[in-house]
Amino acid sequence: MTADPTPDFPFDRETPLEPPRQWAELREQCPVAHVRLPSGDQATLLTRYESVRAVLADPRFGRSGEGAARISTTDDGGLFNRDRGSGDIPTQGAGHQQWRRLLSRWFTARKVQEWQPRVQAMADDLVDGLIAGGSPANLSAALGFPLPVRVICALVGAPDKDQDKFGHWSTVMLTLTRYSQAEVDEAYRDFDSYVSDLVERRRTDPGDDLLSDLIKVTDSGDGRLSTAQLVTTVRGILLAGHETTSNMISIMVAMLLSERDRFEAVTADPALIPNTVEEVLRLDTTLAVIGVPRFVTENIELDGVTVPAGTTVLPSTPAANRDPRTFPDPDRFDLERENSNRHLTFGTGAHFCVGQPLARMELQVVLSTLARRLPTLRLRDSADDLELRTGGMSGGLQDIWVTW
Image (cartoon, rainbow, N blue to C red; front, side, top):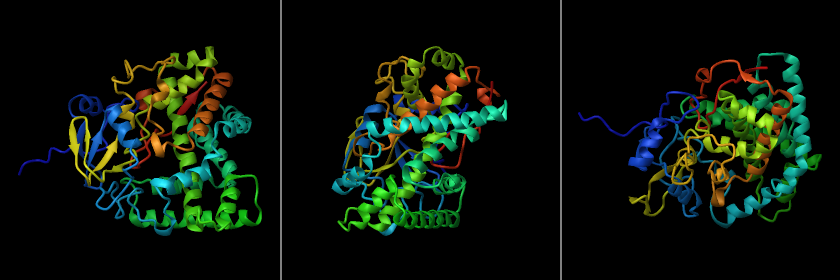
């Protein structure tokens, strides 16, 4: 019997912070490649910037469809395949744009600027605790995880004391290989029950927060947002609002301290902070384990290859972010790179991450606070000893231990 040549995806890697070697190889030799997912289904992986950007921006292609490849080992195939019924949020067309407009006013540049002093106060409070606990310390647990939870809970109008619940539910719902279908179903039930209860409490005691605003829209009866969609929306915001940013804080610190001259440059010149954050976002290879799939509903040509309708495409943003056709000397961490913010980490087009202004601001606040208050910060262990978070659609790094 001939062995199946289709490689398993995600690829293994030799060191935690560097990309799998296959990305560069495929980008140059086979930029439209077949891969096998943890579910056993096949998908088509894209690794060049222009093709990844084109698919992400194409309004014809949604995240799933009839016959789409299953991503995870669970019976439902994972987050993007799961049938959520009446709570579905439109992912395409006018309905999707209407839903985005309901959220976007809470994530404008002006709104984020108004929130920055509150986020700074939260960061300083957490760094106070980090310092008080003494060196060495687990930066992920002391700062990376709790800060985005506090921020998104304050924005939504939820109590941040429940952060451990959010963390558990998110990890289970984003499983690739770690959890069973029963555990996933339980996480959805518990999270939805929690949000439903939160909605009722906020309905009787409204505040100046996103949830109260969305409740008004739902209760207006104008059809823009049903109660089921409200619950799904709030659950998604609580999940996305802390999961990726929490992981990215740890990744950012690890990337800067792994070659400490990067951190020293920022402490010497805080004006470098915004562009440093963009380089971190561009160069990270650990967070987007699978990425957000697109289901091709009609034939499309990508990099000279015809991809047929019915194909599940994986536009690899971290591979695209290192494409030398777009980013000269792409593997170099350049604190003054002129086009860093062209990266695709937050997507593009109709699905461009609505919360990206808040995420960027949180990362900048964290970096400026650490540079100002802990200029002697170092990794406790070697960068090669860092451990990846595995088994989920959202990756990142395990605990980041630091000294000062």
